[in-house]
Amino acid sequence: MSPIGLSLYQLATRRRVAGAALAGWPARPAGRLVWLHAPEAEQAGSLVELARHLREEDGHPVLLTAPAAPDLPEGVIWQPPPGDFLDEARAFLDHWHPDAILFSGGELRPTLVTLAAERRLPMGMVEARKPALPEGREGWYPGLIRAALAPMQEVLALDEPSVRALRKAGAPNLVLSGRMEQPSAVLPASEAERESLAEGMAARPVWLAVSVPQAEENAVIEAHRAALRLAHRLLLILVPEDPARIPHLVTRMENEEGWRVAQRSLDEEPETETEVFVADASEMGLWYRLAPIAFLGGSLAGTGCLRNPMEAAALGASLIHGPRPGAYGTVFGRLGAARAARSVASGGDLSEALAELLSPDRAARLAQAAWGVASEGVEVTQRAHSLIRRMLGEE
Image 1 (cartoon, rainbow, N blue to C red):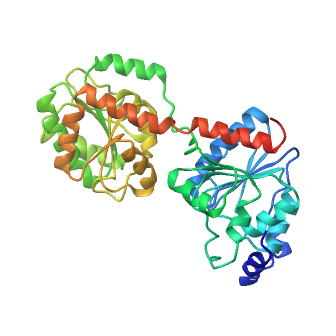
Image 2 (image 1 turned 60 degrees about the vertical axis):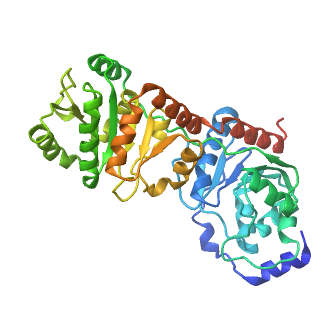
Image 3 (image 1 turned 180 degrees about the vertical axis):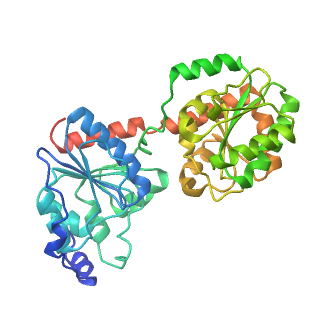
């Protein structure tokens, strides 16, 4: 590590960790501990899936540091990451004694890396991006970025721009790998229920409007009305955001539209003449399996998409969404880049998109692309797993 750059970096902000802070850390588990670090929630999902592989295939205990605690497999410990300050980083390493460290993203922690290198701890990077210092620690420190990258046994870069930035920064053992696997978004469902409902639907065309807020009810009803003129046997499975809206919606659709409506909550099933089947979100895995087209509620006129798009993509649905991604901006970006979802800007656009996807060929192309996005990254996760095994001397 560059003595001048590191000294300036550590002098820029001084901080000591209080002994009381250590009292909240759980005991280190027995065995060879792998430490996975995600600087942002976006990378945490990928590392959770990697941690699952480490637990199931190798039995290693895993420590995951990330800004917030995600859903974790058994045997994985979450902790907030230590600050990149000398005493805090040293205390963290003294307590956890990791046997291998894998960083994700582009954030570098020079103090921590220096201490780990002094202890001869193997380190690597996955989904690596343009390298940067932790937020609030930016500045000009001669040679610091290059020196912080030097101990990495392998750097798996996210994409071509990341490769160029990392190469310029001096990253060793640089490989373009891509995005890692995300935790499975496949929701469970009763196969017996699916078979029973599918038999009753008798190969009818079906579309799903999921988590529809009140502000989007008109658009969904108008789209279904228009689509029925093209496919008179079309069935809408409607899942309102607020189940309390169901009685109002049923009354409106029966009285104003003249549609036959069945309600899951009343143990009714869609019959041959049923135009709308109203359900709730407790069986989403079932509805995704029955509907080859899914409109994602909240994304058109709501506060943002209310369901993870990968839930539908993983089960082979063609996706329609509005311009408001909510918490799923990155996911929609990936779907858009793969041309794996149909974007709409208005209720009229929703009607046009639904009419377009009633063509089985068009729906199948979209669904196949979406499934590809949902299932990508398996090989990259396997490569990261292999890297950890090599760092532990197991390959």
